[in-house]
Length: 181
Image 1 (spheres, helix red, strand yellow):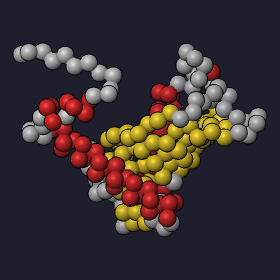
Image 2: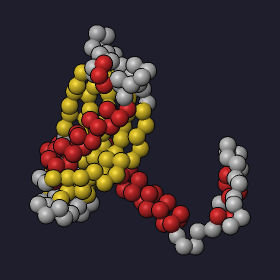
Image 3: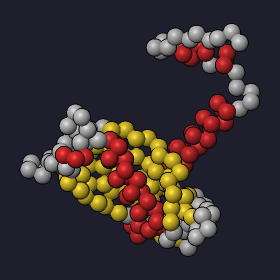
């Protein structure tokens, strides 16, 4: 079975209240992450028809702050599907409702896994992509997955040698003081 990206696309909007702010008066990043996790869950569950759990969150960059009183809109879509997992792309925008000015605040990628009634991983429908943007999103997800896998293999390898990398730290603000155990 296959489903289109549009079949599970979700958008939510919420007014930001003072209770959502941090000590500097901006909307707390943790609150925004919570909303993002909720929309990712909804999008993945809609696509898979199953309960889903968040497996990882990739690339959370807070680009612009969100102010109290702004309307935050989050847009989520399935960017990639594996056998049991889905990468959900989320775009966060805030709007000053008096001026109409819209800011891009954040984009992120949440990986969720579908579960059956016994808590086991469950196969998800494939995805039908039907425009160039959706193709790019799928390809970018593949690239992020490959890069993450390569990085894990490189640094988790039993053949990893610190001396092969130590020179790369020159020019960074780091002082190395290795113990002599």
